[in-house]
Length: 257
Length: 262
Image (tube, rainbow over all chains, first blue to last red; front, side, top):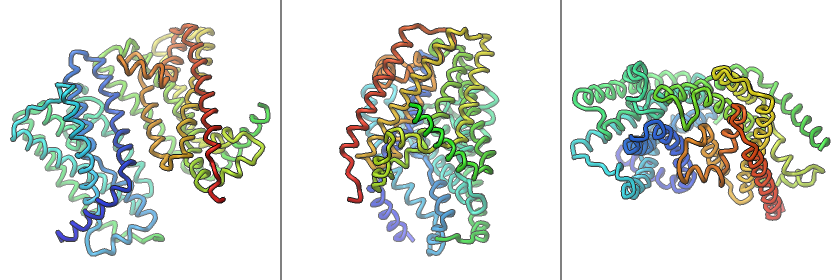
């Protein structure tokens, strides 16, 4: 199994080099919206500039490292029937997606971490003073967030067995998540009702929670509740994913391919 | 000019017939447009929950600006974007030959041949938002305001067209044009907010080098009665320069075109 997965990783690694420039172009584009949002907030609270720079830089990092594009791939593969090729193989197709995620996020890490380090010379607010324990918390929150976002995207993609506009459904969720994942505003600046709602939706645990851990805006018991929420959503999505996968295979009637 | 108008009407008619084939998509498209503008409005609400002005613009002012943004975005998706993928195809497959041999200007043809009508929903929603913003502000534009607004809007549309075409013309050298359209979207996204919100070097760049200031902020200011003749004339001048540049660039690029089939 491990050997098979290593082979997948190597394949995706080679594949990545074919698309590296496109990937980098898209990643640069993904930074624009957070930067504009940051400028709006700096405009509103001029004295808080430093903390907004830290918040939105972390947002760019976390957003990239938890990015999920699987719904687009699945939608296309299921619709065109080429998904059958994966179903027939002896390992679960999700392994391809996982391998791809690991490789591309490795690329983001290789680009973004040095960029962060260079920027921190000019922007003191980016110099982090975290101890080992805090780093561990951040990395755990990030991995949980990445897992939730990945499974959410993959589950939406599996809906393609039933409906043919899953990307539109996913885009709608992305729109809603802008507010509840902390991308439009740090949670503390949202109206209280929206802060409350965000605790019960999965979106906060995808992006906002890891940022809050690094900026130190969740502490003590709230930190525990945050991790609890993230764990619960991981379990929920594992259940949904498993269910959709089994139900979808029964439904699947390989069109074309 | 009259001939080009007639050709454009013919494009309009054929695309409309084509789109009527997919009538059932209309409700879905309507929903996604309304949803899009809803998200944009909610975003503004979140910002104004914490403040009462953004770069000197009040809530109602920003609504008018957002309405103009939505309208212009509707136009881009109506007339410009549908042609993007086709330009690349024409160049790669050599079918640009057929266009170059037609007795019609090639730049005109490749940029307006295909239209996607349902995107006009965004234009109407945008106009609705402009009207709502003006009502919120309790301001009735004078005839002078409207005149200046129309002039700045024309300048703004010309600017958008020129910037878009310059980017599309690079298709003669670059193959992955989808990535380039992403660059345009990123730039266009900056016009969602008043230009006075940006600071320092960035504002200078967005005013003089990539003239984002003339795209939404200038028409919105005109409609709100905050215009002056110098800005308006500058916007026309800048639009003219960019149009000329894009035209030159297209002609220059055509010289590099060698049909793929030969």
